[in-house]
Length: 298
Image 1 (cartoon, one colour):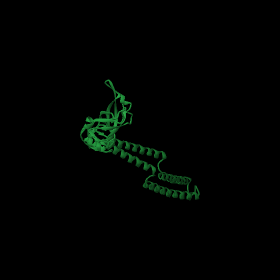
Image 2 (cartoon, helix red, strand yellow):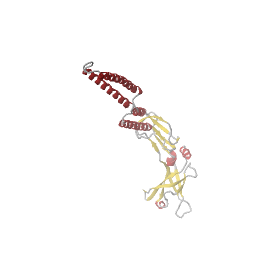
Image 3 (cartoon, one colour):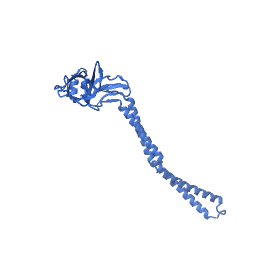
Image 4 (cartoon, one colour):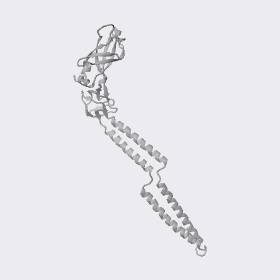
């Protein structure tokens, strides 16, 4: 930004040491740039701004290749869906056809139990050893006991089939869902890091790559100058430093600047400059984004 590098700012301090005329000091303007860089390396897919553009906060200024991150995000979405389906399955009983099959088996067992009970009652009314042998009676009684146990067994299976999974299995399934969702959030975050977004309103001061070039990790692609990040640096004699308190108002004059431009002292710093101790004072210029755009076009 040439206007920042070349501007010479005259500052009129609104205080003096018993003089009627305000003190005049000379300095220069500087900018504190926001340099946007990717966390990981990749190919620059799109550069959506150019030097001198005005951008708003949240504007996407550049995008890197994101095929791997997109695939990871899609995989994480599938894992969330799978874990959620397994949890829903744990929370309900078996499917209706499975329960119906068990009910049909119990009806078959009940019919067999009815038959074995009838045979046992008939044989028990007959004289043992004359009409029916003891062995035959024992076999019928064993068949009856077997069929009765089978009916009870199928009844218990039907009750279990209609229940949800055990509580610890449900807890494990819920934990699996939360883990899958966390992985999805991480994948979405990584995917979001493949685009560079303006952190504040400002001007595009510089672009360092063109589409198709390889960008290294933490290497700036675009630099943006927010209006509030313009500062002035000027020097005053040591004798005047004590009168320049932090927050003191100053009137600023520079080529191409509005007549009402003002600033406030924000950070004095004493440095040795030859035989004279001087202090550069950093000021943040209170100006509008429109003024910054006009000045940057000079």
